[in-house]
Image (cartoon, rainbow, N blue to C red; front, side, top):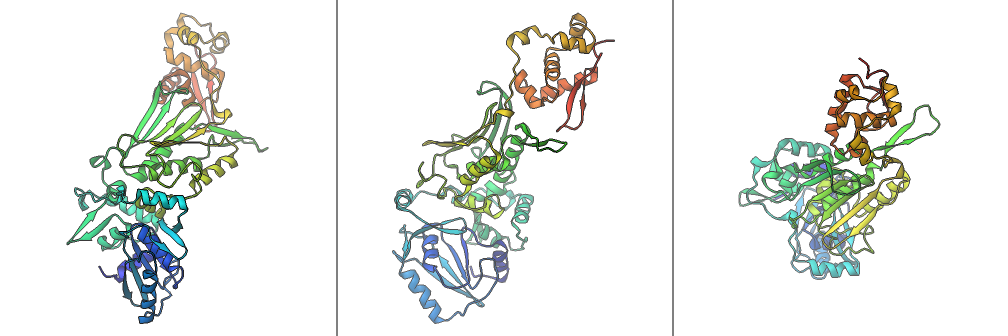
Length: 479
């Protein structure tokens, strides 16, 4: 399909990507050709700067012959097709059938919008893994235009800084979600993963499961969410889940008001979450991406183990993509900054926040990152079983309420109301999440019991949800 003015405008807006390379002049061209041939193929636009400005290039027989020689000098020769468009020369590089391809400076593959050089061990793993079908490039026959959520697509284009165009075929081709063949568009798995009206209609193993546990084990689940609208929304909603249940730390810097900061830096947690979604093995349908919040840590687990070419020694230092199409779309909306730097950004964010380092568990069937919580956000008090059984509020609280604990107060308060009241009396700044963990009921149940306590006149909230505190009302037990 020949390049058109509309498609060129779209490409200039989108910028470089997994299958698009912009080059102002002929330099390192063999590297880009080899990288595309070793990946999924792509197009090199000669005469356009990296930032999308059309400078043009003198297209003549001499230039074409030179480019063809460069392709032939790769080992093995890279197959290309040249296309002229005004003062731009487009080099169509086909995905190679005899990988790996080598140029004068070594072996390269495409990683996001960049050509990445392969080390010896990566080359060996590349050869071993070659032939494996990429999940995100598989055609999904039962997906059609009617299954695309236009709002999701338009939001994506807005986030990527791409103007909507009338020719949807060109848009889908450049996003990499479909190809036009024999008069129709054939969508690949990227289409439902990012733009389906309901991803559950096509896949269930793409769920991101978020869970909040009481204590340090999985024995008691306080809250759980299974997210499967689309990959971008799943990431966003999973982060909302984390924000909801991650306690804050307090920073005292000499100002009248203390500063509240997250117990763990959001940027580190978000980076780990996106990595888990982007790099998981989607052929493995027996597990989900898991986000699990415990009393003393947060764990994120991605099914599938390390990508071929990655080891415990080079993990976090180089980038190998299991799902290049997924990574490309996340990069277009700036959820991924640079390929291969995510682990280092996690370490830097944790270090700058002064919290414990992350622990990485690299197994054959999964990759897990564990974020230990700093000591100052881990609840230090627990109600003993004896206290829960006896349900006594204590003499001091009884005095605060204006009476000794007897039948009269027992008639007014339920078991959980009395436990909540005792903990508020001990710690006026206790959070609903902490109450949930201490008592062993869901946050919704805590909120419902607090409403009852307020209605009965036992407690009131002073100030906002963040930065405020609870007050046990004097004489509330008297009639």
